[in-house]
Amino acid sequence: RNLTLRLGDTTTRTGLTGRGIFFGGVQIGRNFGLTPGFLTQPIPVITGTSSAPSTVELFINDALRQTSSVPAGPFTIDNFPLLTGSGQARVVVRDVLGRETVLSQSFFSHESLLEAGLHDWSVEIGAVRQNLGTRNADYGERFISGLWRYGATKAMTLETRGEWGENTRGGSLGLSVALPGQTLGQAAVSVSDDRTAGRGHQWLLGLEHSSLLHGFSVRAEAASERYRWLGGGSTPPQKQLFAASYSYSSEGFGALGLGWARAESWGQLPLDSYSLNYSRRVGTRG
Image (cartoon, rainbow, N blue to C red; front, top):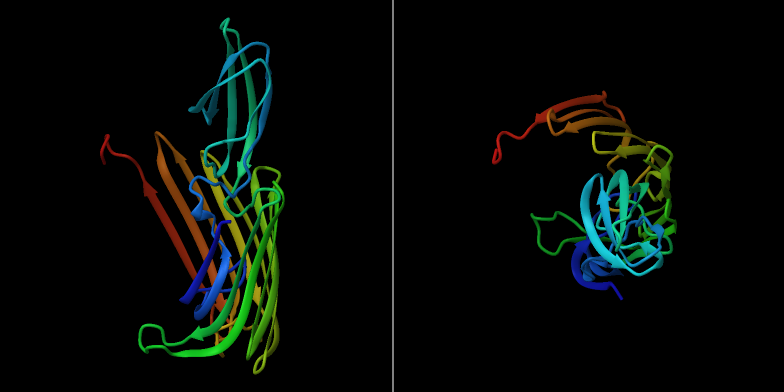
């Protein structure tokens, strides 16, 4: 059933917002890793018709990935290899007389999306682990939390998360959706109610694109001063975070990456960080 039960110390599962915490207790939830080869993200489907028994070759971005035989009549290819990002799938149908038919279709898939109709969930009950690595068996606030994700369609995944502790309670709603231009869009909003800090909120927006040559990501987050998360104690959240990155790669040029981020905490000056990296293959082994 792809279920795992854990007793003892482990970490909570998080969605688009929230932070994973160490805790001691009980956790039960989906674990698709128990079925090797099972793909949770949307799988493209290509259909066609062959007039005679034929050989079908599947090319992903001009690289041969699969060869199979089909009888005369309609056929469907829905067992794609693991794909992440965007690209083009090309199917070459070659019958016994040597005649060829070529079908081309663009695809987009991302690990943040679930296949249509697929559920992913986790429930935890226990106590927050404190002073991990410095004190033995030190536990604090007792809580119960849960995460549920659902593939509404191949292009849309919904999620919700809730946590109820002795001092802090909260909930969130999130959405991941495949947008035009083979881009992934994400949005989420969270609310919290803390016994000491009061009520607060947090939101997130993001865009991500990845292709053979180019890739980019843009992400923005913000939280009110009174927002709190389970296990966070009295630590105030980050006021706002903006991050952007761009990457380019080709066989002849190599790979280039650019990144920028600005983080601002409540009562502190903003912190900017910049990154630049370049790499390329040297010979056949370097």
